Image (cartoon, helix red, strand yellow):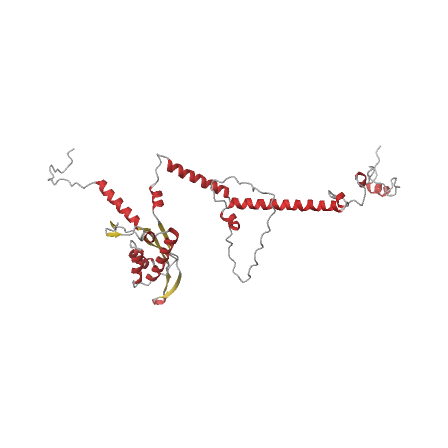
Length: 354
């Protein structure tokens, strides 16, 4: 038989039964053990730690412990200084093939105290630091890869120069033997149609002659072109070292060379390093602004103000001498032109006879 009672009545009667287990008894029957039984040294007067016995000893023991602490901190500082020095020398090494970073010879030297930087003036403007270590991460993030690439390029260049069957490209030879400087002016408040006239006027002329032309020109933009041409000449002298032959060899006399330009003009070149304007061209820029111009019958139109820049390509006269010699050599290789004999045309027919 099975007992069938309502669960609610059964639970109500179960709450009246006496409790057989005391509430204070622990659930686990494993006996507890004091934590200090496993400690070997139970003397509370001796502090714990690697220097416990030495700290409670005599004055000599305490002095020895203090010296050990100082030597460890000094050693740690020496290691940090050596790491900084090695890293700095690696970033500043001038040798291209110096792949092995040598360790410092004297590791036992005490680190010298570094001078403290001067306090910054609060009124001084903020500028970018010029110290190489400060911007090394930005300009040279991977110095080892850069050194490997430069080494590969040098090996390739030396191999190409020493190989009997290799030939230097013409463009590379001209870049190596001739100098060239390029400069673009900022956007000038004029149109292409007006500025191109001045560009054509100065193209092909020496720089001093072009400056004279712009000085006495009646055009408004001639003064701006003259200023930009002076800047281009200064950049060519400072950055490329152009136009310095007269100063280097002032005591020597040169025989002037008579050449023919590509325009068909004959000129005499006394200084091969004299700078001339090889190219002068203009570029169309963005519209500066627009304005509303009223018209007749209630209508209007928009007028746009243009902006244009002028570009200069400066070269030395030795380039024109080389171009003249190349044209002369090409004409010589071509040979004289032999005209056909002046004979009457015979056997003319209306249709093909072959």
